[in-house]
Image (tube, rainbow, N blue to C red; front, side):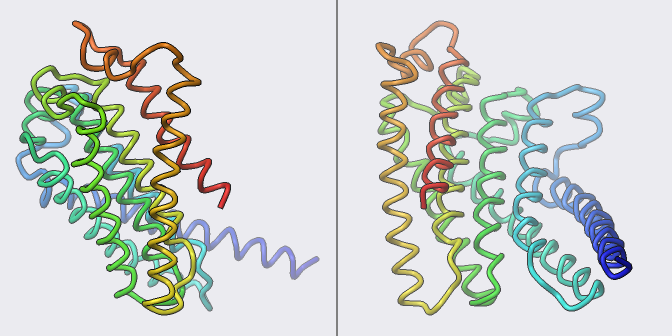
Length: 289
């Protein structure tokens, strides 16, 4: 009984240590976000004086991405609490750097058609904020799997992360051709939150698919990456098929694209349904594998 009690107390101590280090990493992440990524933004001014909801949406997505990414290291086994703390600090600092790098990629390549910083800060564009938040969350999902394994090392993790980011960019190029309307013009010129929510759902679903594909432990470059590639192709095709089926089942007789882009007032509910269909499909695929 005493051994069980001591083990429980030790576990509580480790949890408190992880929470303490985690909040420290949140502070560091917020500092880095403001000083390195959104350098023209005064966070407190935008959040609590200007009451800018778009800034809040983007920032919460960034925080959520960090939380998801940190989940990859919390389950790893270590010998003692000192190693646990050092592992979490080093991993957390790496996560913040890669989250910022992923945010830059999202800014320059995914939201490449307009100035996302201006849209969020000056125009309070919720659609743009949704896409930025989704990019952060998708980046966190990718990092969760890419850096979490106990085999392969940092090089494998970085390669997996780069592949994941590449897929997010590829999806952002393909998606407007599938929807048959100019997604980015809708977000920028019409401040269309429905278009932003739909694209955000697709980005999160893609990040989740990448997380699932990279979840298996690394064996070697040929075998593992062949497995990862096949899983990615299968999952992405399944995502499209399930999304098409969901369109038929959830909104029969209605064209979601028309509801999002071809109405005087964009139908945010339609955008939410489309975004939900992508994310739900990604989780269904994950649970089936």
